[in-house]
Amino acid sequence: MARVVELDSGSGVSDVRLSLDSIRESLIRQEDTIVFSLIERAKFPLNSSAFEESRCLDSGISSSLTEFLVREIEILQAKVGKYDNPEENPFFLENIPHSVFPTHKYPPVLHPKALSVNINKRIWDVYFKEMLPLFVKPGDDGNYPSTAASDLACLQAISRRIHYGKFVAEVKFRDAPQDYEPAIRAKDTEALMKLLTFEKVEEMVKKRVQKKAETFGQEVKCGVSGDDEKNYKVDPLIVSRIYGEWLIPLTKVVEVEYLLRRLD
Ligand SMILES: C=C(O[C@@H]1C=C(C(=O)O)C=C[C@H]1O)C(=O)O
Image 1 (tube, rainbow, N blue to C red):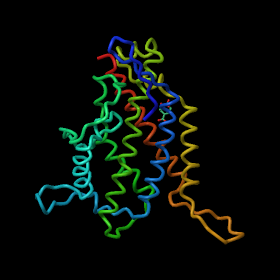
Image 2 (tube, rainbow, N blue to C red; image 1 turned 180 degrees about the horizontal axis):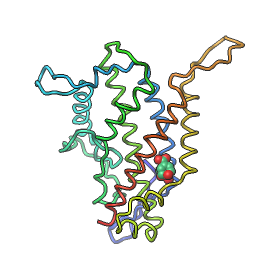
Image 3 (cartoon, helix red, strand yellow; image 1 turned 60 degrees about the vertical axis):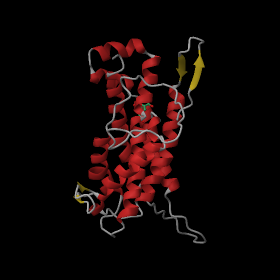
Image 4 (cartoon, rainbow, N blue to C red; image 1 turned 90 degrees about the vertical axis):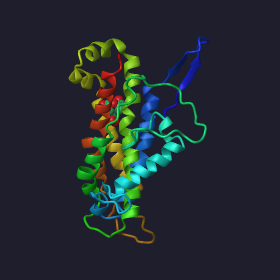
């Protein structure tokens, strides 16, 4: 999480300070997790049977193996307090089970009426229908449990990054409420999108993730000289495209959704 400085003014109300720089630092660190999770997932072929609907033998309920795994893991993770962290957003939990252990008290950074923004249904669809076929090989090797575990790692890393847009929006709003308030009151999503967009930052993000995919995902060769051809576990241009077409735009969707509720 971005470094948050909590000051007690003596009135009992905490004044939580966060900066756009520290938020961006966290997004940069999250890129490592995302790039590594894509590289790990690319070990397996598409294995679409894992995420296509089938009948669960136990309950008779229609679900994919991957959905079943994610639902069960989310319940377990909720019980150890994962969703007490405002950075984490579940895919399926409607009623989040209480943690069975005492949990950390996270400083209240986000606006209470806006913190429930959750676009995980859209992320789920986009991930399986559009992103995944781009960076894994076609085919089916039957290794569904490991494939589903890898998909879960990708989905959670991507969801965390996209929903981090709530923190980005909060800090941008606090830095310039006079600019944001009229657009929020007018529900002018286009104006909000314009206010929160920094094209230069987006270009840098796309270049940096490409470089990270080149660095983290290159085949390491020893003792072979004169062979300069580099092979990558995931095509670095595809990683950059995944950011440009989905991760950045969806982060901005979360930013706008959050801002629309910021004055409620
Ligand atoms: C996240 C931010 O907001 C927007 C979204 C970006 C992103 O998703 O990487 C980058 C720049 C902005 O257009 C930011 O300003 O850092």
